[in-house]
Image 1 (cartoon, rainbow over the protein chains, first blue to last red):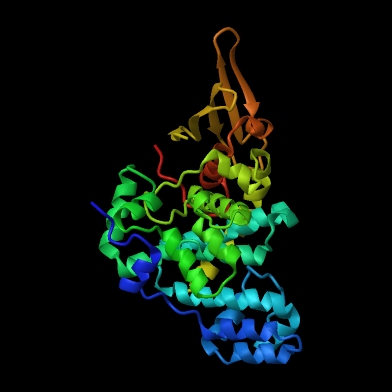
Image 2: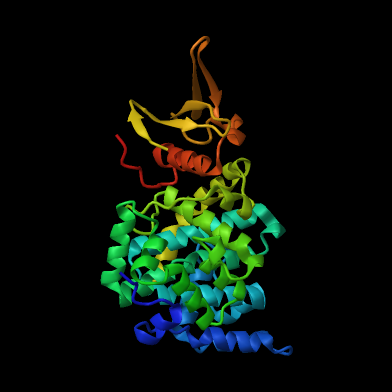
Length: 284
Length: 86
């Protein structure tokens, strides 16, 4: 049997309407590219989208950010955190807004993959090539393709899940066989459509198969994301019930994580687990 | 890993990267140095034990992550879901 959609373009033209990114993010990106942009202008852009502004404030006051003092307004957050952190904060808030349709198990898996990604990046330091806040967003978004499939191709995706549960093949390969593209392909396309960074789109594209990562310089990020997903699943946050994720030995080396690193990385990850429910609630 | 509950311990057969086989025995949380032990069966010398934390490099990272997560789920205080093993 031939899969109905042989490319992601075909799938999107025919059936899938990708969710749009809240305007606040693209406006903010434009503002931040202006050399003389002031902090008050940044605050204004965020405040103009009340839903995002509210989520950004909840996020900045959550245990995840751990600021200690309560931040009462967007302006205060901008002054306190600076433009770069605000950009990640608004993007994270926007992603949570878009994840509202996800099942709770998938949401917990996405949040905990983000927390595991943070722990890996904190441990690797500058060698990781990405900062921890941005890495958290990679985790949040890595399985967004599953949400898209649930919404637009529920029967086909359920068949792929059953195939994976039966142990016939990993989920992403079952999706390719039945749908024609994997959730990693769909998620990478969403990241591109949202004009997020190339490295984020590449990391999502390659998070199950490094060879699917179009730019080889981002393979390490894709590998870190794969390892973060594996850790999340082993900790009990499987993306879908009874879907076991497996990890190719070479991926650990590509991710720069050795057996010796894991106790510290996992201790940091376990310590952050208590943030999970507060973060999951942000998607509601 | 193939985990099972044996009394108060959680155990699994383990294969080391050098080809040796052993049993990993989890009895307490990660703050306890003897919370995860490795038991080797030797036909001539009987059984010997090593602390898992001192043998990390003898394991593939997949297995280290699996073992540490199982230890946290079974004995940790972070509230992770306890796995359904018997």
